[in-house]
Length: 530
Image 1 (cartoon, rainbow, N blue to C red):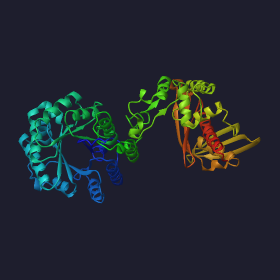
Image 2 (image 1 turned 120 degrees about the horizontal axis):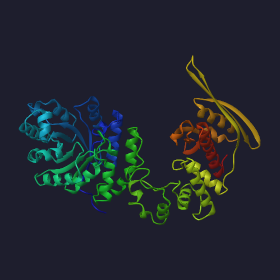
Image 3 (image 1 turned 180 degrees about the vertical axis):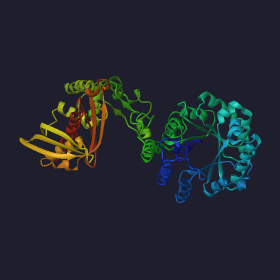
Image 4 (image 1 turned 120 degrees about the vertical axis):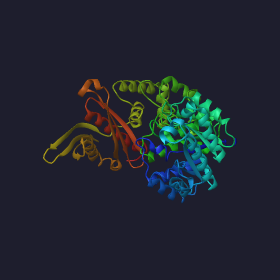
């Protein structure tokens, strides 16, 4: 087994990531994420800026109760203010009061920012760097120096930016981090400047901190590593200001699997997708299906030629084994599919369907026809399974629709809506008629359907509709456009999704709802239950 790389992972999700639009962490969220990052194997966790808000102060108080096994906790702050001694600077005092083993200092390294933003002299800024780094080191802290606007500053005045890093190096910083704060540099520029600054410092290691404004956050960070940086800073899922920070999830996978830098154990790497999903869940963000390595589509195959090849040799269209990052292969079915798609997809659902069988060809033709009508089966496995079962003669109808009616009554005086559905079914030769009300027409139809069926199929008592999505397929047709409805249902243990398409939204909803109930009853029948 190879030894771990010298490269360290520095996570700033809780501070830099929280500055992203729509990202809000409670105190409890921050503590949960910090613990998860530590368990995952992160080397450094930046908890926040104790001088900026009360929540971050409370976070560091709460973090003292956590026994970090893998990570060092860092408090983030800035150098002393111009004209103030470091001993009398209140913000520096709060950094010490946080009692973290590491303090990360943001410092100006651009002449533009020193003169126009700090409104101080270039020499005073160098003094602020020296004094603050030295003071914190003397007080037992490991200091990580984050040079703000490194690359822009270096392009303006390379001598002054170099002097800032030399000052921090001489004062005892452990890492000198080069920051592409505006995210406007190219990988070639990152590599060139990183290499030049590396040759000018004596003791400290270099780090790299990039933003994604040009879509190059990860590429720029990896360019910095290739040029000699030994720490990579970023956030889980690339959260951050504007378009975000360097995505640590993507960076970790590339470092370990593409660049041979073993920053985690093999077991730790298999938790990469789980970490990504966990942080999205805590942040109340929808996971990106197209996220490299960990997204649901990262190893999804739809084209018939691709699926045929993957069935023979997975690496023909997969650049790594999905399991190495905790992901898995998915086969999609649709208008571009071939019989191999149908066979492999059926196999994942526990159905035996031979690739070259007449049944596979029948299902494929039906899928292509239905997708041309507006159906989409990628997210509707239950509807797809019913199609396959019908082709294999493994399906038995549990009820027949005779008619349904849905009405909505509006009471303007009370500003209330009443939705009512009536349904007539033929169940085991018996005509059944029920009426139900609901919060909306689909809810009422769902209630009426299950009310009619539950006497015959008690298992439906546990079924609930948990999600309902509508999409207009052909907006050019105006009110006559086709509507696609996805319904997700659950019995408390598992969930499944179905799809329906029609020019009428109620009809589309009924088709998806019928499949949802039919799927549960068919599944229970196949398991020998009632």
